[in-house]
Amino acid sequence: MDLIRLACSTGVYNGIPLADTIRRLARIGYAAVEICAEHNELAASEDTLQTAKPLKEALVRYNISVANIAATSVNLCEKKAPGSGIWVSQEHIERIKYYARLARELNCDSLTVNPGRPIQDAREGSQLSCLMAALKEITKFARGLGVAIGVVYGPSLILQNATDVQALFTKVRGLKLAFNTANSHLACETPCVVVTELKHRIKHVHLADVGSSNRAYLIPGEGEIEWISFFRTLHWIGYKEFVTVDLSSYADMPDLAAKRAFFYLSNLLNAYKQPRGKGVA
Image (cartoon, rainbow, N blue to C red; front, side):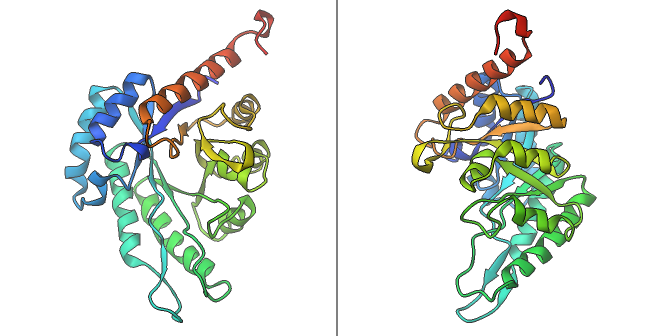
């Protein structure tokens, strides 16, 4: 378990400068941050070096890393007009390439993308074909920079479950999975089973819990997911990357949520490492 390191997403800190967000999360104790590409500072920027400079200074100052860049609101495919076909959005692909260059500048080798939501009235199979074409282009570009593209799945997305993503792995060279525990649970999967079956494809893991009546994206430990079993499974498969806390439901209290998640998860991991003879389950 020594190899599992905690990171936290900056997504709920959108109104706060990223350098200050990095400071806050570092002081809580996180080893890394996941930078949300939708943050105001990144969304309006076109200059990779200019954007990266203050972030690199903050990372060095607070001795913290970037675990992942999450570009999860950029749809790779679009429908230009009612009745028209589905097209690869070249503008959005160029934006993903910008985030890949930014990841390299920040010594981060992981970039998460969202496949997008189903487009109404799309011809059967056309959106998936479009998605594959877009993923092939961005994975090839990112691979040249040493950055892996991980795609997410979820009940409301084009890729709804692990089976949907698995079908792409043989068709898109270098494509990885950005696994989210809450999305897996909502897809009626067992997260431990999925990470075991796809252990060679997982690039990044997002941690979020699910409560009763499918209330999603709770702080780990406040829902139904069995976290001890999940971390044991990560340890068993040899997962050596960061795990990122997803705080997307806590925009009104990000610092408190980040602290609660950190203390719960760090205590859980520390307890797991203790000898069983000392009464640790």
